[in-house]
Image 1 (tube, rainbow, N blue to C red):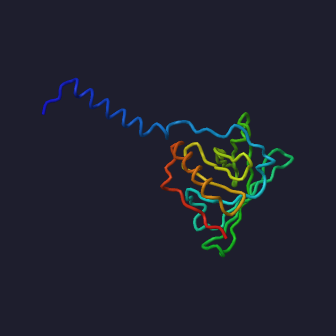
Image 2 (image 1 turned 180 degrees about the vertical axis):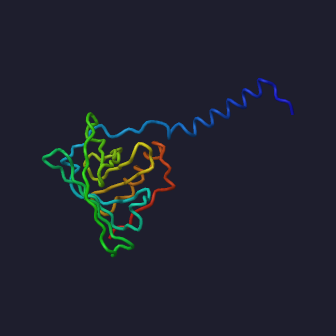
Length: 178
């Protein structure tokens, strides 16, 4: 079969449009919420779901607690039970630093000096009952709630928004809480 230059152009154009449309969501810059009141954000959060990470392997009943300090940073305390919901508690303490001009929605979390990881708050309930945290590369994702369970309606709405943001939700796993 012989392709005319016009047919070859049309086929190539369709290929590139398909390729670009499949990549466009992931290449979009990630947006955070416009503003986070750190005093309201402070306190205990329960992990509802996340993208599994090496450092959380075997974790159940995962929680994070945030405490603002007078020195301007936030104390971060992460806990989980290893191996099962009744397993031995694992604990790590770190610090979070707010990125200037981010409306307090972009932080850098440090558990081991000198390494800092990006912690971006990309979704937040008006009443601070849930939050969604990620990294701009979309390889990290945590859905957090003030309670051990998040109602299905809120969870479904969060999932819909994450799909629109270009997340690969096939990696998302629910976290078992006790």
